[in-house]
Amino acid sequence: MNRSASMNGILLVAAREIRQILKMKSFWLTLLILPVAFALGPIFTETLNDDEPTRVAVVDRSGGGAAEALEARFAMEDTQWLLRDLSRYVQRYDLESAEPEAPWAQFDRWYTGADIAAFEAAGGLDAALAKIEAVRPEGVPEFEADAPDYAFAPAPAALASAQGDAFGDEARALFDADDDTAPEIVVLIGETYPEDPRIQLFSADQPRGSFVSTMQEVLTVDLRARLLAAQGVSPAEAAAVQSAAPVIAVDTPPPGGGARETLLVRSIVPLALAYILMMSLMLSGSWMLQGSVEERSNKLLESLLACIRPEDLMYGKLLGSLTVGLLMILVWGACAGVAAYATQGAIADLIRPALEPVSSPGIIAAILFFFIAGYILISALFVAIGAMVDSMSEAQGYLMPVLLLILLPITFLIQAILAGNSGWMVQVLTWVPLWTPFTVMARLGMGIEWWEMVGSGILLAVTIVLELVLIGRLFRASLLSTGQKPSLKKIVERFRGTPA
Image (cartoon, rainbow, N blue to C red):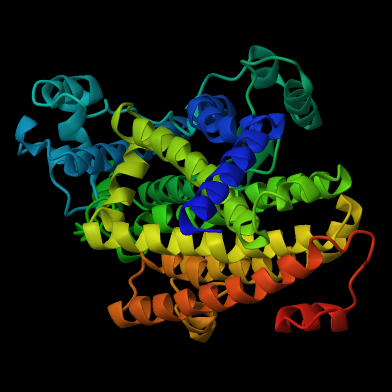
């Protein structure tokens, strides 16, 4: 058979393999998973996020201003975090020109009470957003402020008037009531405070440690001020002493610029490529295996082998599987591109910087090589399994060990990459051809030496050539051995090309 006829046979088998897979409903369901995830992800994120603040009621029977102090302190902390988030937004998108002297346009500080007062005196968030809007370029998403953690409201009359144990009973009744306006935390400051400094806190759920510590800090300041006043110190002097605090300058990398954050962002696409390669291989390999089993059970192999060589049948199946895999990657990649550059929001902000490490021509060429090489390497194993079995139940006996052999090390690899660990295990996996494609692509984000990439690529290519020779022998010898479950000895003989 001449080379032209052989190539025509390979292409015909590949086209038949592609048509067979495209007819499967599971293929289309799998293909649509990622687009649907990109479309529904932001919706589910907004739905699942609990943006409702925790409702707090403070009953102060001591006649002081503890309730107002608590509310003011939590409001100040909310504004501090709002300023921090707004300044990070301004820094990320270079919007400092909106008002260079504003607190939210300065990034090297932890915002103090004076900063908060200046921010609120200038009109607060609405005024800041109006100035930012004047310089915000097209395509930059709008700033979205987080909801405050706590909302203070007056205690219901029945709770405020309850005495003794009845107060706790009334608070618990409010927690159990189906009322979206009822308090979830109740703080009681007794009539004998500060002589009796005990504060009672009732909560529908376990209160956050940050809430308790902040409340304790505020009430400690209030308690000390009352004790100082009892010693003849004026309230103004007591407040001045207790409010004295250093101005702390905070030096942090810009958004996405921290070492840990940078590593995670740079590793998103490489890890996703390794994971997608693994998933698409498992899926297309199982589809190809299912088709091979059906061919054997329907006696189609005899008809195929009457027209083409066994090697051409094997190469056609590999080409068909590779084409289906690349089709899946192209569709998923297009969806990721649309999500990154045609939409706005958290997903777009995450994908855009993540594409930078894999945008150079050399890296793109490396990704294509290792992706295709990995596909051929693993798909050939599925082809070999399909040639040796007569049913899917029999195939499972070979398939599960192969899948575990591939998946378990990759699971550890992904964890190591996310932890920023390039230790001995990652180095070993780089040079073991079975895991080389996954490891090299996963390491692109954290950095890999060029000689490692080239050396492991050459070793992988040599391994594929040897694999195709050996599996070609196994494939040829196993095709017409229907009904004969090969022993390990027979498999070795077929690898060696010895008649079995």
